[in-house]
Image 1: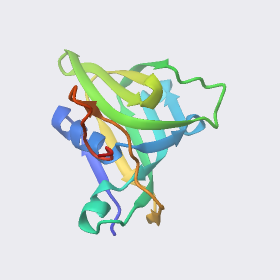
Image 2: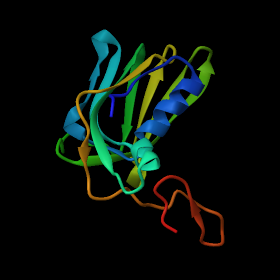
Image 3: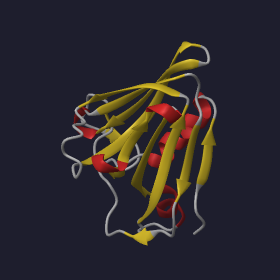
Image 4: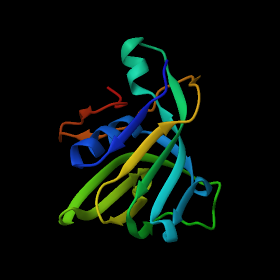
Length: 158
């Protein structure tokens, strides 16, 4: 499989990046904000949802870098930098426009943890850093409950 490289410059682009990063896992120690450069970056292990769609039962992960430029402020909730080995499971990335093109990018993790980036505009890059490797299983969790106990979304258990 080829490596994935994406750029996001608007909300729709960021939604595509978010879909590719659902269930990526990252160590807190692999997350950094570089205020002088106005850059936020993280390295994670991305679950390759597309590989499983092409060949059912094929589960793969890729080492992937994600960076955001033009970041003015970073706020964390439930992400303690004193525990660099703690692993976070990324669920989604969302954008809320505040003063176009500026806004807030939220990285939402399982367990209620979140990182909020105040940005001048959306300027993000995702890049796989090497070849994929096999993993024995796919992530499974309830994404949405319709009130009748049914769940939906990638990785949801039936």
